[in-house]
Amino acid sequence: MRLHYLPLYLVLVTLELSIIYGISAQRNVPKKPLMKSLLPSEALLSIGHYQTSCPNAEGIISQKVAAWVKKDPTLAPAIIRLHFHDCAIRGCDGSILLNHTGSERSAIESKTLRGFQVIDDIKAELEMKCPRTVSCADILTAAARDATLIAGGPFWEVPSGRKDGRNSYASEANMVPHGHENITALIAFFQERGLDMLDLVTLSGSHTIGRSTCFSFMDRIYNFNGTGKPDPSLNVYYLNLLRKRCKGVMDLVYLDVITPRTFDTTYYTNLKRKVGLLSTDQSLFSDARTAPFVEAFATQPFLFTSQFAVSMVKLGNVQVLTRPNEGEIRVNCNYVNPV
Ligand code: HEM
Ligand SMILES: *[C@@H]1O[C@H](CO)[C@@H](O)[C@H](O)[C@H]1NC(C)=O
Ligand SMILES: *[C@@H]1O[C@H](CO)[C@@H](O)[C@H](O)[C@H]1NC(C)=O
Ligand SMILES: *[C@@H]1O[C@H](CO)[C@@H](O)[C@H](O)[C@H]1NC(C)=O
Image 1 (spheres, rainbow, N blue to C red):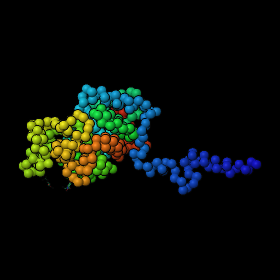
Image 2 (cartoon, protein in one colour; image 1 turned 90 degrees about the horizontal axis):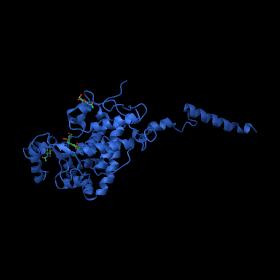
Image 3 (cartoon, rainbow, N blue to C red; image 1 turned 120 degrees about the horizontal axis):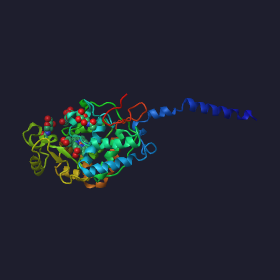
Image 4 (cartoon, rainbow, N blue to C red; image 1 turned 180 degrees about the vertical axis):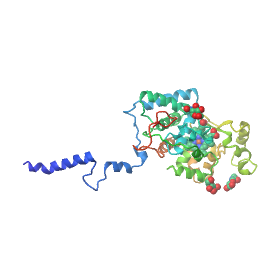
């Protein structure tokens, strides 16, 4: 009778051992940790990551972003751009926020980045409510979503669980496209980060809000390509307007001249009328590979807003640090944790 249970007992003991020691009972079944290591890093992000560890994290972030943007609406585009620059170099790891000597943030190319104080304010509040729990990279990602929503753009759920990186180099800041690249270089830059042409056209739609220094397109209005003439792909009325607005290279003009503060598809209709501000913006409509997407968004606003949500999640997934041995939860977004 008792012997009858012996095989079952052995099975149970083996199972227990396999759980305790992580030994798989069957060799051909991969161990769980192995499965996990085969997953791409972004698969370890999740919606509701802070549900138990810091239940109100997203609420705090959105309240803070709303309060700051209410005081200064120009902070909405600034935060969205900050998130892009973070993800563009070494992935979305909060490295753009590091303020040590020689960091990406300290480079000349990063001089026009703004909104750092918003992230610092959010971080300070979160450190009081849930110390050492919410990463700076996650804060920036969620803040970019909230800023989009406030500007009139779509809402989307933000997957979280990014860790903060410890490396940031000024020499890498010039890798972020600055408005003079050709379309082939733009496509390649996005592709290297797992983003396709549709993502390129969609995310460039962020330029429906915000401003640029004249520095970023000065060549287009006076001496394009060393020809001594303006860029022929610029609408003449727009050209004259820009010449008036740009007295100095640090003067600011809206990226979307028609509806500068509204998150809409006017950015795309502008491109069709040759009133894209940056040469890179206009090239999205000049090139046969990307023009169909511009055309689609210009005529179907819903396509743009729904795709924007999708592409922003993809941007937020770029080269994230999610494994136990990667990155840290910074205590102060400006500095790596002391060892
Ligand atoms: C496709 C390549 C891109 C290029 C070449 C580019 C270039 C630029 C440039 C030159 C500026 C103005 C900087 C200055 O003040 O002189 C700017 C601003 C901005 N960019 Fe981009 N960008 C690109 C993609 C993106 C993406 C993917 C996003 C967001 C997902 C983004 C969001 C913004 C925003 C919101 C601003 C306005 C910032 C403000 O008003 O403070 N850009 N971009
Ligand atoms: C960042 O670094 C600059 C230059 O060292 C300094 O002036 C500034 O106060 C720092 N900002 C923060 C928030 O630590
Ligand atoms: C585009 O830019 C890249 C990188 O700067 C350059 O190598 C390439 O020749 C350019 N292509 C065209 C078509 O101008
Ligand atoms: C600008 O110059 C590049 C090479 O220097 C050339 O490939 C391109 O066609 C020129 N564009 C215009 C509009 O002249």
